[in-house]
Image (cartoon, rainbow, N blue to C red; front, side, top):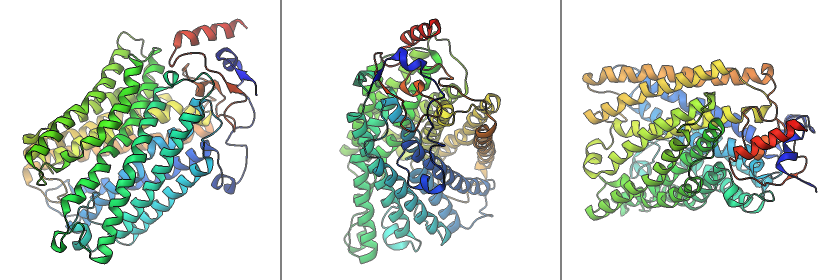
Length: 551
């Protein structure tokens, strides 16, 4: 097959062969597809549904917390609300959202590949996700679960009479979807890069997905084993975690957090990759310290396995262990700080375009920084003892996961939407939504830092009257946040039919995904591209564009 240089690729037409949307017809062709782009769309639909479901549980909780009395929900029902909110949002939204949707669609195109290394396994990953989600929905419909999303023992193994086995089985199956996705990403990145696309020419989004995939492969099996042991103990009554029959509940916490703290980086590393892509595109500059940003992703993946026990500072571990894990928890902030400083250095003296993706990323940088800094408070032994299991922890977690992952996801979906659909969206409504999300988020969660420091415990449906004003502020912010999240569903859906055509490269960005048609053809490229430029090499791009115009 012939090859294309940067110049040649730029002038190949956007009106190429039939694209992935209209190449085949009928629902069955979608359900049996091996095209990574179609699988990404299937993930987009299913994950969005789970996001709306998980968000509805949060709305119910915030309405309950408008008043100090538990006058809307009983304590048992409230326990189920926050449990289901956590399970759905973490296992079925936050963990898969960027890798499964944006990674699935964009990664092979950024590599110059026709598809993933294992297209059938890619489809199997989606079916496993759907099966796990279906089991989770069955649990919700038939009464829910009340253990909290962490399934802490011995409550989950002995005292809870809800559907613990069903929901842990759903988590077990969802884990296999993550493992297969990570395997596919790693093999594809190693084996299917276009000619000339060396490691140091890879987009930073690819580096981030690579580091994420390593964590998926190494950490997720630990969660699978832990959940199997929990189900086995509940079935048989053999003591593993329950101290009443010879088990150790702290062992469960060690095993659960050995996965679940690295899982935080499964959620945030892809978001950091999106941030690098968007910052480079809308500043027209190379990312400052490209190699530092790339290797900081691998550093986060490695150090993320060494800090799990900071979740156990009040669980009875030794003081010496706590000191070591406190130090490591401070140290893991270093590679994250490298990324923030390098993005900031890239923005310095840049001519920044205030397009919607950039607005979301600026919000991401601010919110993630607040979440990261408050994480250092929780790594400090004295402060952690004071704010443990309070709303301070809730606020910190949401600043990292929602302020980080969701803001970056919204940036990514707006950035690559023209490439995915071939259509542009309404910029006014998109910017308004970004503003509402940022304002609503801060109004929702910043008061919770104060609530937690003052001593309001999380997971309570009734609270002391002096906390009401801050809770009302939080619920008001959640209302604004809900509107901000609803708007993209409307204007992005509207753009599918009425949006103006996007063209090959509406942002003037650099990367192989911007050299093929919008939407891409079924096999991504008409001819195999050859990469002769460095990542984010805007001077080379500008030169090539000038040559194209002269032609």
